[in-house]
Amino acid sequence: TYEKLWLVGSMVLIVGFIVTITYGSVGLGISMIDDEDENVAPTELNDDERFGEPRVEQVGDDEYAAYVVAQTFVFQPDPIEVPANSEVTFHVTSRDVIHGFYVPGTNLNAMAIPGQVAEMSVEFDEPGEYGLICHEYCGSAHHDMEGLIVAQ
Ligand code: CUA
Image (cartoon, rainbow, N blue to C red; front, side):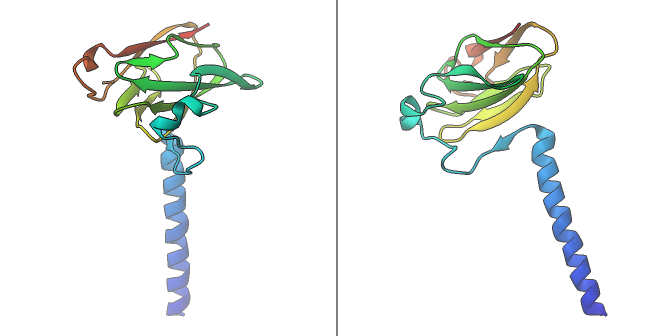
């Protein structure tokens, strides 16, 4: 019966780990995609159907995708225009070095890493302008690297 206890105990641990990992990434609203099809190298960005033309696109009823490219020292598109009261999923990558992607007052907070795509969703309840800040040191004009999200 000790063996059964061990078995049950390890099952509980495994399920617990899975729940923790799943909840952790959902709770942060950020998921790094490891799948190679989703990631894209900086040299491939211009030919990528998502990032070749950074933009906001409707992908469902009240659902939008924003494809954002960070590069020294700008964010594209600029500004990022999104509808208010809709779910917007941001897909963020970098063309050169690591940048930050941070919108104070929202859950939008990620690193823009070359070769990786960060994803996070948000709904802007209040129409308005939201400042976008690079909060990872990226070079001489890091402190001036800002973008703008316009929700309307
Ligand atoms: Cu880009 Cu700091």
